[in-house]
Length: 323
Image 1: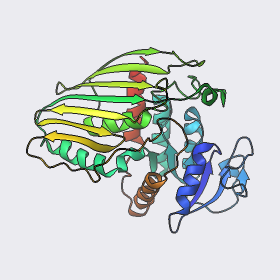
Image 2: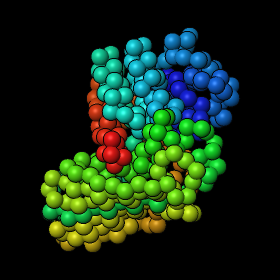
Image 3: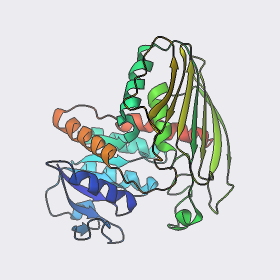
Image 4: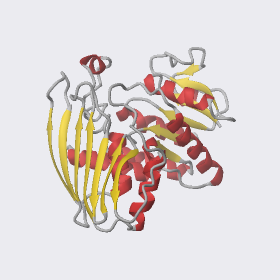
């Protein structure tokens, strides 16, 4: 697979490092509005737009700010190139729908990097939950108590704003965990929320709580924050008819379920993953997403998270925002 990276910010470096670990895949260039190349590949050829690229490539990886994703995705689809988008798909349902329609019209794969779905414990839980083996679901409580300092929000004028970022902690830092919640439990029927800006100079929320009611009666809660100094591991606590379990940063850390063995792949303390910094040090999950993306292209199959699936996360966040 030959990739063009669209964007040259922090997350572009994660993909470049991940692709170096995948046999048969290579980054052949980047698109940058500033003309700046990614820090991890300073000699990478750089163009202003995809239409300017003068070498062969198969797919694009879009790492631009959230609200610009649709621009590059639509351009890539018109060129007949497959598309992998860093989360979220985009910040409005209109933009998401435009991306989905463009990819479908062009017959190209549109995938979104919600890599928490690749973690073995999440995969095992998905299978068990879908089987109905845990009985009636009572509650699912997701806590994303992260920390970002003011320098993070000051590092770019769009950070923490509505026009480009799409909002604050729910659309940005909490998006991965919210996607995983929907993947495991589905979309709720009703959503109510409270949002606030407590600890930062920013337009959107840095803390909030949502209450969700599902069609089967399950009550869910999502608390998301970038105020929780120094930043804590994301935690999901689930209670159902057969008992209770806890997941900490995608690893099952407590399992009190009657009659069903703990499906955890590794029972140990979870790492601090994204709670304190936006920098990704472990690229293994991005490698899993890239491998899944390549297989979907080669086999003509649906990727782990396609555009229609990823649209639900943006939809739920917009409901939390009251839009």
